[in-house]
Length: 156
Image (cartoon, rainbow, N blue to C red; front, side, top):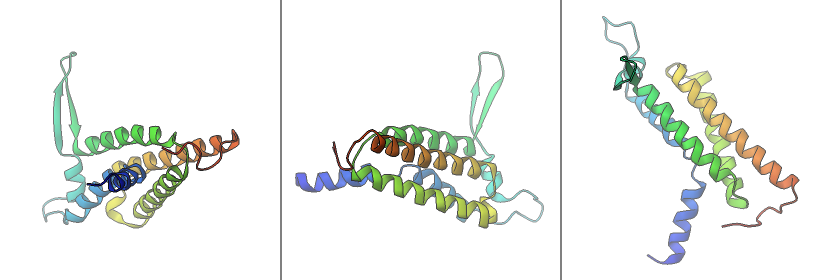
């Protein structure tokens, strides 16, 4: 592969909002989950998110139960850390990343408010994580502009 193509692939990866991945996973689970069975009252999606992912024995003697919803939120928190580090970059690439992250938040907000399958505590917390990233990126970008850094300066 030519170095020029590697640079474009790297730019795409740097601009890609990683928090979109847990949102897409939730969307996939929501679209694949069906209606509850006749003898069940809990929606299939809620049952899937409450399903046991890991059972960790603790030093205190109790077991810590982590559900699939917990694991999805953990993934989002890890991606939040990466996104906050990416937010410290300056230049046009960071502006694109901030705009894409804001678009992911708008998508999450619309789904949460308008679609019944997205009205869950897991998706609400996921939406709040995306909002925190959008606000963090915006505040870091504004702080850089206030400190006199020109847009596009120190692009790497």
